[in-house]
Image 1: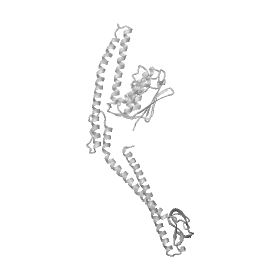
Image 2: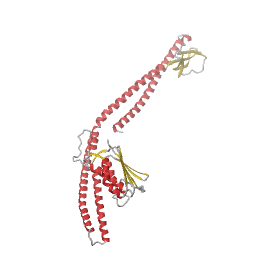
Image 3: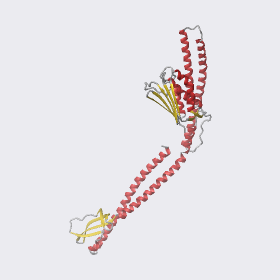
Image 4: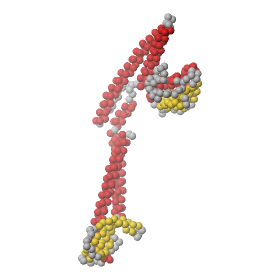
Length: 418
């Protein structure tokens, strides 16, 4: 969830809580005040009825729908006014309506009277309902206004932060120009941009130093490796070497070749991680698979491997041509290398999917991390091929999945073709 949406949500929850509690308090307070007003009305009515009895009006003239006065026998103790909620049947509406009733016993002259006075609460409840509805609409209007104002204000306040994020998102470690931000008058964002500029400057310097070291180290290592390889090759051509000496020289030669391949692999990984492969073009991966298959068919034939190709829909992707070649080549070589003699390989493609299958034994080591560096099943492998494949896939948002089923290793490439 975005920060702005989360802030508005918190404001909304706080507003609903505060307005809800305020609404409940206002509702009950209003109800209480109106109820008190009705009680005062009943008390006044009772006083009027008492005055009328004192003035000698007949009891029959005092009794009506909402007032009842009866003479009672003398009692030892007069009670205080009692207010009760009651329901009284209405003949016209044919239903019961809520009333507030005042009842008390009073001595007037020498006579004792029981007085009951009722007041309908229908108008009171309607009034409270109207107040509640009006209050509800006012609260909803305030909440909407608060959300709109908060949205407009927050968008303006957070615009510098969004600009900073946009610049960081578009920044590439290999670009020549250092990152620069506009001057802003918000202290916190200004401090953030200054710290980011300093940090990105250090990162850029570290990147350039690492890039220079990688290139220099790789170049300097290649020269002595080439010399060692050449000299050992010449030694192997000598006729006066016995078999024991020849084996020593051959071991040196094989180690040199392996070290050279290792140097190239690590250099390639470093360049991919440092995003030094900048130029991109539209690559037809299906055609690339076919071209590479032709180059490696002879290697497959030597192991008597049967290969089935099923390329349906075309798959184009925008990526560096060299890296696309490395991606397909490494997967094909991996399939051929790990397929036993007489095994099979299946290459297939559909819309947005490339599939590489090869027969072989299941990997029994559960701690084997296939796409990490120097993870290998035999001493002949460098353990870099699939780690290079994973780096290329990550670079171009290609999802790579592996599974083993029914004697087949399956590598599945899911392309981001949007």
